[in-house]
Image (cartoon, rainbow, N blue to C red; front, top):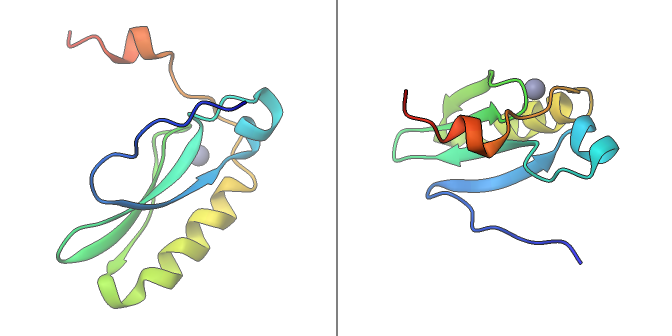
Length: 86
Ligand SMILES: [Zn+2]
């Protein structure tokens, strides 16, 4: 059984990265988010902004997210460290 955590507000799609596939860590994703103006893709593994377009280009952002997810091997920083505010 895989635990499914709630998606952050604005996230409309998620792609598991290569690292997620290898490690089984489903926190390693590329998230596609939408706000009133634009759609963006951010990799939670390597922390890079992958793609950013106006909302009418949502499919292009998803395509970029999928492409990055297929090759990214970066693993997210552990939650205990990432949660630190210092
Ligand atoms: Zn990445």
